[in-house]
Picture 1: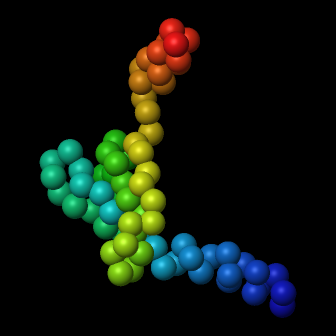
Picture 2: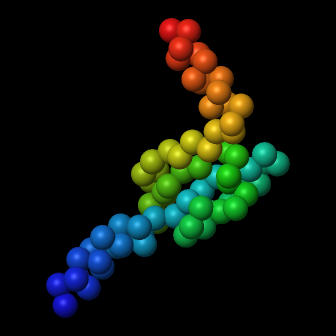
Amino acid sequence: MKILLILALLLAPAANAAYKCKDEKGVTHIGDTPPAGCANVVMYEVSRSGTILRKIDPTPTGEQLRAKVEEEARQ
């Protein structure tokens, strides 16, 4: 019984959030899970009232990761 309560409390904040992004074509996507069209653009986790909870940067490509590592090595 305690385990169910703990799981419910852990999952409750996620249930009250949605994901929002604007894809490369300018189309806005909103969903309970990260929309597929948002993989390469900045995405926001928002509350049901529209408040931004956090910003999620796109996953960097291999090239972008290499450039970042090289830049850090130069510094």
